[in-house]
Length: 375
Image (tube, rainbow, N blue to C red; front, side):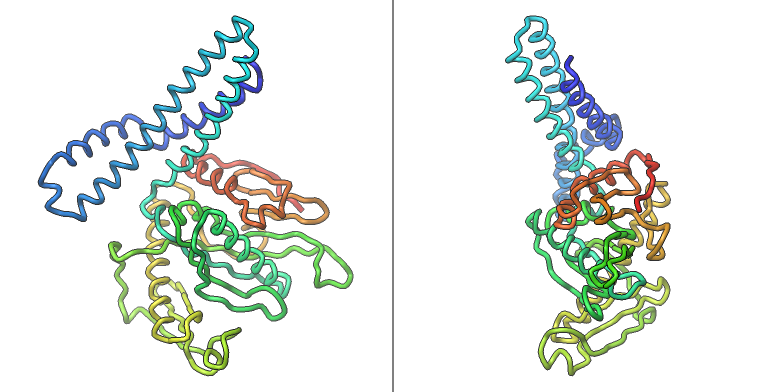
């Protein structure tokens, strides 16, 4: 078999192996039989919410199993066809088979990522919070670049992107910002972006044109709906109001419309100043707090299952998940998965899918990649 064809075959087999491992194949088949039996039980439909949950689980499991079987079957058929074509010396048919393998490999990767988005909150909308690290204007400008990167990523995927909270930098960029991305599997795709992001470049704010390193943190947590019960004890909260900053006209700058809520037991702080009404800002801050508490519970469960646990760390050296180098060369490297790109401009314009897919796969395999940091 030609090297090109073998590479496609290996890629497809790796994707199938990961899918079967993720699904726990034998258990998944048994579980699908159980769900099919429950759907046929008329008593299930007496509880519409329970029925909806069963149907949702059944649909996802059935789609994943069907896709895995279809890819495996097509792989066997295509390899058999190629071997026959090679034996008969039919080069045109061999080329067609290689093209089919390439298409199948792309589909396998797409189905693999889709199957990996089966977590409890993966289908939900998501908040993405960006905070500048130490370093003043440099880090604030970098945080602003990250805010734009995630905005562009969401737009690329047809998501609705809303700016929930925004604190402008002193000269450029932002001190912090919170985005809400509304779209299918928004949290599932974005959840692996939590961590510290590092930028290396020639500073546009340094008259000596020296190279600077800047840090900013990203924190991703799911939007929770009314069906998810999050208990919040009012006595655990400290609620502060303050004057909103930034653009918005006279009203927004002369009334205490902005709201900050601190959940004392966990130390979680959320804030919102994007609405003119203090009432609306408070309601949105409550929504963020519920989301953060829910995300903390998901992280606790994941840690107990010995999976990768994205934790909030110091914004600085030794904690970064990805480095973006603009000078002296062009490179973006994920320090968890080893995935790289030599087109940082594209990455900063929202081309993040390859990084997200690799990080999702790593959560299933549990394998870490040793890579050297980049200067």
